[in-house]
Image: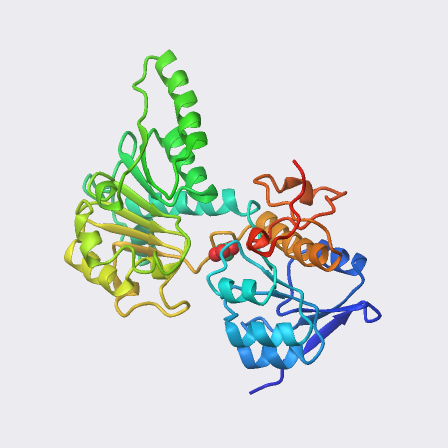
Length: 381
Ligand code: DGY
């Protein structure tokens, strides 16, 4: 195994911080420098093993910015704590790679990066929806293979989504943003399944309905489903935006896939294990009219056997947040979370994180997921 190489910035810094992979942009490094951090940045482009991270932590490390492909389990969190670690900042909005209960038990604040990737991920879900519904991957392969010989009235017939129903599984920030894109942009009725009602989503669709009715058009439905099993049979598109937890692992299994319309579109930009991938392969094989658009996979980067051979599945390599704006914004938020905790600042935890993207950022940690459980100070509104 080759030894991991590290680049050191601000070597005189008082707090030792490990950043397991280099991050995009430069501002994140400035933020850490201003917080008096000595920053050691991994020079590799692959996820570090737990063993390599442990070696890097050594006996003195005050904070880490880690990647979603690393497994921060009890063992690694304990090693961070033992090294004097005071914060773990995950470079992602999702944090299923971290044992949150254990981090909280050890008193380690866990940062994440919401907000800056909401629109990018919702746009990717829209792109996958239409790529799947309109057979874009299949059509690309067809034309690139030199098979396009003439316009034909029956070539690559797809699904029209306008005025159909989209089902949202998990109507948090990204799910709600996607729902609005599909409602306002494509006139789709919205049925959502979420832990809580989403009055602001419903209010925005209601406002759009006033516009529609004033132009003589039928208003849209936007309602919360009482159960997932109620949503699945009525939706023409189902888009997954639920985080991965014990409760959502394999939420879409063979039984639930069978509840969906045989010609429905299933989209996942959240986490792969929310769908039982083997069951999805079997379902897509048995139902050629069914379509799936996937950004995430159960055993990333591996794909379930047969998935890549299916013409009715569009796949992309976990690039939902892959825009420069989002990725540089995530780096800023990850650094701001870490720097703020080390400097004893309170926690922001508000929906609007844009003040952190401005020149003068708030003296606060943008998003610490276990702030309440740890009794951290939350900024006054
Ligand atoms: C996340 O942030 O959780 C995404 O999966 C990567 O942007």
